[in-house]
Length: 258
Image (cartoon, rainbow, N blue to C red; front, side, top):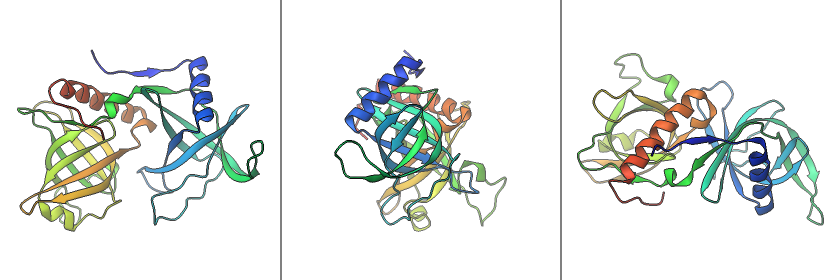
């Protein structure tokens, strides 16, 4: 059976939002920095639902990164995990809410966003990482600056690195590469990814963030977190392809939690 991305109806959206607020569920906020074609992930939490707006904690970046300022009408993506599914939607920022208070709780700042009119639900098992099975060859290529910055030809100033994808999920992947790559990349760098699942297969493109590496001397294994796939129709199609492959590989290899 093919893994699907389910489009929720309005009662289902309302139910998911209420449950997420009641449980204080963490959310991932995906934003596009000014003047850039790539996406980054921030961390927040749903704290209230009021009429046609949601309130979330001011989103924070990774440790050591400066806080991000938001403006009304900024477009963002939001995702959260609830039960056996991951829920994703796109929305816009309405503005900051200073000194917001919920009942007897101390006053705090919040960010108001528009309540979603559309929401997709994904099976969480697609975010379990699975090994690429023996006999399957998945190739990956990547370059600095996001998928839209793909070099048009050979350019020493804008290299394209490649390697073998060793495991993958809907949220990220690992690749075996030349160990020299780890001397060029810094953790947190945004790259463009091109994934080919086999001979004759169409390429899948994504933005990704470099997260970690293990250096084994003659080679290294590097990890990427996929970002922004749910923000565009093209990204959603790529996500469908990846989820289908995760399900297929999961039947052939033992899944491991991300």
